[in-house]
Image (cartoon, rainbow, N blue to C red; front, side, top):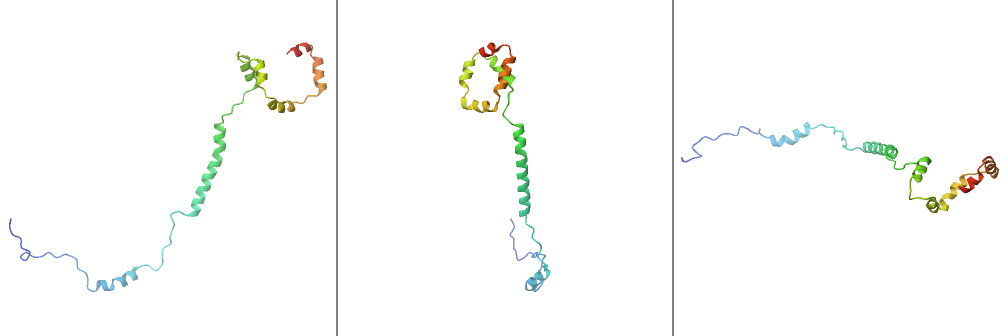
Amino acid sequence: MKEFKLDQHPKISAGFKVPENYFDTFSATLLADLPNKEAKVIPLFSKRKKLIWAAAAILIGVLSIPLYNHFHSSTTEFDSTYLENYLAYQPNITEYDLINEINLNQSLPLLESTSADLTTVEDYLIKEGNIEQLIIE
């Protein structure tokens, strides 16, 4: 390998030169170039926008609860004929079992809601020819 001597070869210039007194006047020229007015600061998350989104979420929640309850209701109401047919075709359940299961406290509101006068009951019994059959049942 050949010896390399720095003093013999010409040096390459950097290509950029700073003007004289550039850094002395730099701060003054920079301040002169800056605008005098400050720009309006726009917040990324405004409080009003958050309130609008919160109100919309609450409104959607309030409106969706009745719809959810309407479509996912688990209560099923049976009509009296369905219950009568079910009880008639169940061989394990007798009339005595049903009578024993009826709670007197539960049946009191039912008895209070049916109001029949004695005259109405007497008229019905007179019109029916099979009073003995009704007594047996």
